[in-house]
Image (cartoon, rainbow, N blue to C red; front, side, top):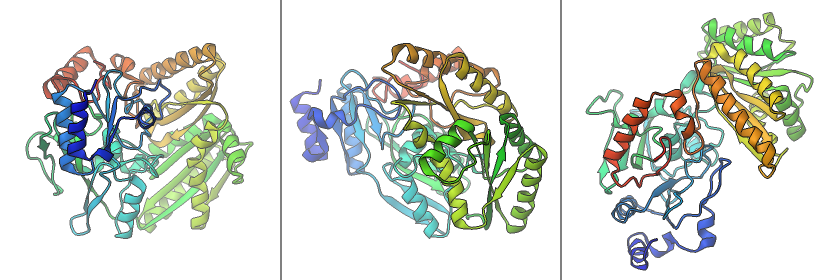
Amino acid sequence: MASSSLIKEFQSLLGAENVMTEEADRQVYAYDSAVLDPVIPELVVRPTTSEALGHAVRLCNENQLPLTVRGSGTNLSGGTIPSKKNGVVVVTNGLNKILEINTEDLYARVQPGAITAPFAQAVAEKGLFYPPDPGSQSVSTLGGNVAENAGGLRGLKYGVTKDYVMGVDFFDVNGQLIQSGGRTVKCVTGLNLPGLMVGSEGTLGVFNEITFKLIPPPQASQAMMAVFDSVDKASEAVSAIIAHKIVPCTLEFLDQFTIRTVEEFRHAGLPTEAKALLLIEVDGHPVQVEEEAEKVRDLCTKLGATQIQVAGTQAEKDAIWQARRDALPALARLKPTTVLEDATVPRSKIPAMIRAIGDIGTKYDLTIGTFGHAGDGNLHPTILTDRRDKAEFERVDQAIEEIFNTALDLGGTLSGEHGIGLAKRHFMAKEVTAATLNYSRKLKKALDPNEILNPGKIIGG
């Protein structure tokens, strides 16, 4: 337990107003968006300067206090749930500045607590483009995006957060500032430490500043909604579009249950009799956009689309994407507990995975709405349940395990964009070798001998 003298030292270095010891304050940081038991931290600190952040890390290590960094707490894998013993939460919302948007060399520097959507908007106002757009972008932090290697709707064409990280400056466990990466397009100096830090979920260092690559925005785009009377036809259309070497910037899937739930929520005029929808957008040079949009429409029609609605105005385009962004909040209204997974398969296996999810829902008598980034194989089977119903929740656990097993059997992965955290650490041995886990644990032990940096996440321990 943190002694009164240690708390006073935190207060001296961070400011008394940035050290929270009252239970009512600490309760707020006991959980994140994963369906896991909350853990009340012993102490919550909120550095407002880089120097204070370094001091906080050093003090935690010197006193062997487990440290969990938290942005907005939107992650879905338990990555920001604090340690059960003497846990300290370091909140980054006091380090939320966009430090630079460089329009000559196309990069931006930010503090870890900067919010994703306002950053992307600020970049857009400079005539540039930051593509990663996680569903939680209106509240999620860029530090959290990097720690979890967040994805989003544009991942199919533009990749995920790791594809835009040029550098990460972070504090090691001793509170020393480590500089990694650079501001040049090419930078191969030394070990690829930015690559090591992306997706490390706060287990190897504490971010102080991040440098992101920016790109020019596409000149044109066209969005459309393809309606299908069969899930198989829709999923086969996804595979066909990719197989014909067309890479839309976004290619999303909604099953019938999700369509009807979104329509009840938004009243946007979605075709509720459809068995599945594909929401598709192509972008790039105007000529390329016109050509690819025509090919996509032809493919969808040949594969059984009963209707294709092309967005003619920005308002119609916004309506299409609002329908997709409404999927999770609409589903989450139906039951007290929402379990959102992100098992991911190779794109050619999407039809098999969608069929399997349907069979698993039937087998375990569970309501599962499925939507997601079908174009990159990243589906979000969303189980609606009530955690207080122990018998039903046992079936949920069994269904989740079977979903993961199926994804791995199809050559997929445990997570496409939400990370491993606490929720999936027990499944890691199914995807990687024992040697991989041992290597990762030796790396963690070397960099964090007292194992205070977000212990228990990804590889256990």
